[in-house]
Image 1 (tube, rainbow, N blue to C red):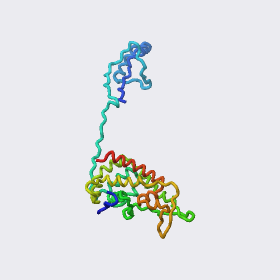
Image 2: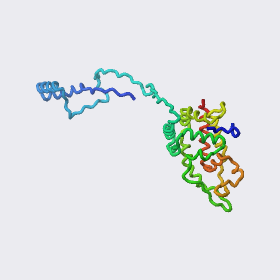
Image 3: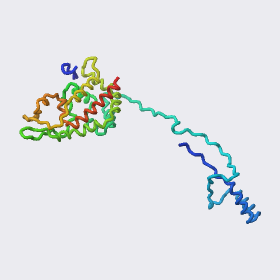
Image 4: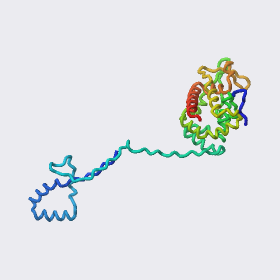
Length: 292
């Protein structure tokens, strides 16, 4: 496969506290004096033997101990480290295992869908890496080759509407591309570049089939494709067409002279074009900061 065209583009837990009971002894002695010494001794022995206390008289812990009261010695709790002092345990990342190119469709699709769920409908083609890299290579040369983009074909066709003696591009055409552009815009750029770095060996494997000169690198065609998309004009005014046979052409010669990539950008509409170009700038900048 030779896709190189040299003429076009070279808080810690609180310890439990014992409820102090000795402060009840003066009250108990008063009861003993009224009820009789012998009864108290008998009752006291029974209570001591059973080690029980009246359940219907719940004891509460006084806010401050009575004067002269000495609290039982308790073990001083060991100071616990605060959350800020606790060491942070780094979770080990699952090591990435690069699949063979022929077996890469499923893991690549799964990874991309995790970045943007709506991308799923655009990832059904076999040989996913090769299919997209071929399109990128075409774009880098200003080409838009239909047979390479059949897997991206839309369910609705292009339409135009009459405008006096001419035709006008129907703005409903732009809506056909909304879901695709929104899916791309939803992707986290940094995560996308991480994914790119993981699969770069497979992308390079496909790139080497393009027969570029030895000094060309994979990033060269990516950057050139991005440059073509960024150079496309964004037109907010109605676009007039001419209709001959089954083909529509741009009435304005300057637009008709645009390359296929720029014409494709016109067809997605000005709003979608601006969103897509903004995302492309983000990706190119992040790629430049992380490229080997």
